[in-house]
Length: 128
Image (cartoon, rainbow, N blue to C red; front, side, top):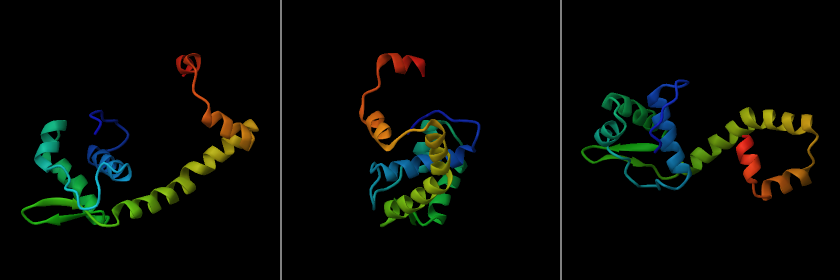
């Protein structure tokens, strides 16, 4: 997990989002244990209650289950559930803005595909 925090969102929410990304990326599989609250708190120098709050959101969302005395584990179907939610969120929030930009720039599907498949030059990297 990344150790940098941004000021736009509470830390517990950022921790939750990092675990979600780990599930979506396959780093955490169904049945895998989450890192312990104490370890995460120590590693990221945050209050254990902050970590616990982020983990509780995952439990509330049905992505993780608590096993008394054992810890928290990724639920079966968590990745599938997340993919559905993330796809809907992308289509509702991100896609309209991207579509508008494509339209404004007059990009064709061929240009989009060619642009996505070509490597970025060093010059373009410096310009960013």
